[in-house]
Picture 1 (cartoon, rainbow, N blue to C red):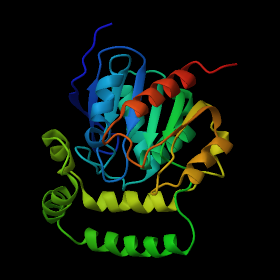
Picture 2: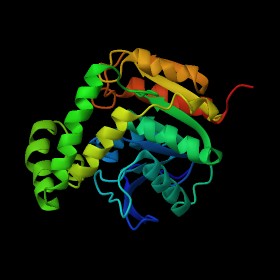
Picture 3: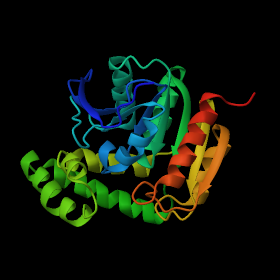
Picture 4: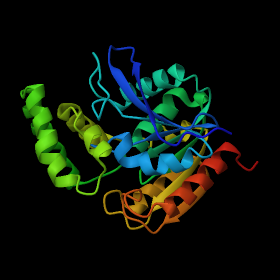
Length: 277
C-alpha cells in the first residue's frame, strides 16, 4: 500500500456556488471522512490524527461551510446544506461508500448526512457528540444571545469579520497550534460560525435518529464538560450501535496525547466496517 501522510489540499465546487476546502491524507485504502467541530477547521481538529490514520485509510478532511477555507454559496449555513456539501465532496473524490467520523458539532452534521444519504455510508463513528446538546433555561438564554450576535454580524462587513478572526480569536486560542493550523482559521466567516452555533443549540435528532440503520460506534469523552457524557451515551439508545468506547478525556482528545484516541478510532472504524452479525 502506498502512503502519503502529509495532506494535499483540494477545492470542490458546490451546487449552490460555494467551495469546499478539503485535505486529503493517504493515497489508497478504505475511505474515511473526518468532520471537525464548531469554530474549528479540519486541520485544527484532525491533522495529527489524520496523518496516523492515513497509514491504513484514505482520509478526507473537509472544512465545513463558513469554516476555514470553505465558503457557502447561495444557501445559508445549515446542517442539511453541510450534508449536501459533503455528498458533493464524495462525488468529486469518487469515494463510493465510506465511513464518517463526526466530532462534536461535526457529529450533528454526520447524523444529518446519515439521515439524508445513509446508503452512501459503511458506518458512523460519533466522538464527543450527542443527539441533543443542551437543554433548559440556560439554552434559551444562550440562543437569544446568539441570535442577537448573528444579527449584529450580518451588519458587519466581511473584512471586519475576518479581522476579528485573525486578531482576537487567533491571539487568544491558538497558542499551541502550528502555523498551518492557525492559517486555516483565518478564513472563518464569523456570520456562518454564529449560524453554526445556533444550529448546534437547536439540534435534536432523537425523533428520527432511529431511522438511521448503518452500523455506528460511539466514543465517549468521560471528562467532557462541553458535551456531557450522559448526553453522548444517549446516542447508543437511538443508533444501531456496534461499539461503545469510553475515553478518560476532556472534550478535545486530539489536542495533546492522542494515542488513546487513535486506538479508539481504529477500533471503532473497524467495528462499523465489519460489524458482527
